[in-house]
Each structure stands twice: as structure tokens, then as C-alpha cells.
Amino acid sequence: MRSIIFANYSAKDTRRLGATMDVEQSYVRFLGNLILNLWDCGGQEAFMECYFTAQKDNIFKNVEVLIYVFDVQSQELDKDLHYYQSCLESILQHSSHAKIFCLVHKMDLISEDMRETIFAERQNILTDLSKPLQCSCFRTSIWDETLYKAWSQIVYQLVPNVKGLEKTLTNFAEIIDADEILLFEKATFLVISHCTRKAHRDPRRFEKISDIIKQFKLSCSKLTAAFQSMEVRNSTFACFIELLTPNTYVMVVISDPTISSEVTLMNIRNARKVFEKLEKDVARN
Image 1 (spheres, rainbow, N blue to C red):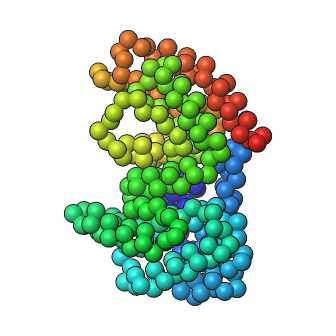
Image 2: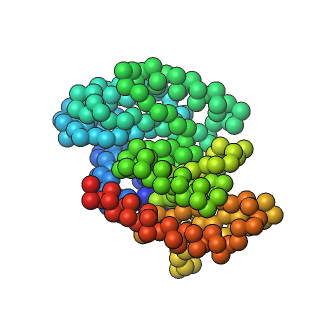
Image 3: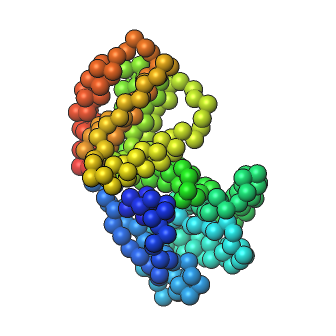
């Protein structure tokens, strides 16, 4: 999972990776100046016991986000929930401000007609068990876009001054009369902000776009080519994906046929200085 989001692995490539042993620590640069310190903790029973005894102070101090992954096909749900509760107790003791996310993973192995029911059952269990903390639950699989939806929500919580970013994005959308604008982090292509001015029937479009573009970028890299920009146009809309700042891409969707590609691309170029200044101000603070 971590390799797909942060290390540009495809789902197929992860078959070559072994299971996480004990605690694997890595640093990921996100949005240029934000350093994510990721602690990937193996779920084998021998390691879990150690997390809550010898390594407790080391692992659970100064935590901003706890992401707990449940295997939906696990035959030991009671034990899984026991370990999760132990994590929550440690979080309450050492990092009570941390945000909690639960991923009900490997949902692709559940028959499609049962996925909603099983996920709802697990979500209710985890919500009750997490009190007084609040947890956000997501169903995920490495084989579809659900992974991007979950991680976009997670990193959204970590982006500094995200409200200021959203306000600027909304102003930009109104100025250029865009139906929708998405802002992606450059390396991961996770959605970090958006503005929607025209309703769309597909609520999962953001994560689908992240998945599609990330896979396209991987295909380009295999051909020793670099993804730079994209324009898609048909009779009802035009979509532009362009580099906005050194650390972000922007996607602009416009349905007004009187607005030419040249005008939209010029508007994106003119907006770069505003968003670059916003990034620098956040970095200084």
C-alpha cells in the first residue's frame, strides 16, 4: 500500500515485496517542504505484542495520524480488534490529538454484492470501539481507486493552511469560469484540494482520476518519458492537467465552448505566481 502511494509501484509490482517485518521507518517529502515520517508496523503477532510493551513510548509519541489496516478476510477478527483497541489506548496516553483512520483492506476479495454490507458492519464496529476518539473508515484495495480516496483524505489532514489553499482555488475557479478544479500533489497525484461549481454524477471521480493519471505516469516512465501535461476535449467539456507549482498539478474542467484552450492555459500560467507564493508562505510558517 505504502509503495503504491509513495514509491510509484503498480499493484502488480507489489507482489515482489515481502511482508513488513517489525517497524519500517521512512521519510517522504510531500508538497516540497512537508516531510512525512512514516512508521510502517508489521502486523504479525510477535511484533504486535512488542509495540505495546518495549516500543510503546517510541512508537506512539508525537503521532499526528494513526492508520490501522484491517484484512477484511481475517479469520481472527476478535484478535484484530483487541490489538486495535490497544493502539487506541496507547494513542490516548501519548498522542491524544492524533486523527484515526481505519482501512478495511482487500475488499476486492469480497463479492461485489456483499461489499457495502460487510463494510458497513465493520465500520459500525470500529466507530463504537474507537470512542471517545473518532475514526474515519475507508474500504480499500490495491487494485482500484479506493486506495487513493483514503490516502487523499489522510494527507488532507496534514496539509498546512489547507483552508487558505481552498479559498484561493475557489477564487481562481470563479475568475476563469471553471466547472471544477482539482489540485494534486505532484509526486503522489493525491488530491489535496478542490473546488466544484457544477454538480457531477460520479462522486468517486477524484480518486479515479488520481489512479488513472498515476498509472499513465508510470507507463511514461517505463518508456523513459516524463509526464508534463494533458488536454482532453469533446463536445461537452474540456479538461486540462498542467503543472501549477514545483510541487503540484492542477486539473481544470470547463464546459463553456466559447472559452478557448489558449485562454485557459494562459490563465493557469498567470495563476502560478499566486499559488507559488502561497506555498512559500506556508513553508515559512
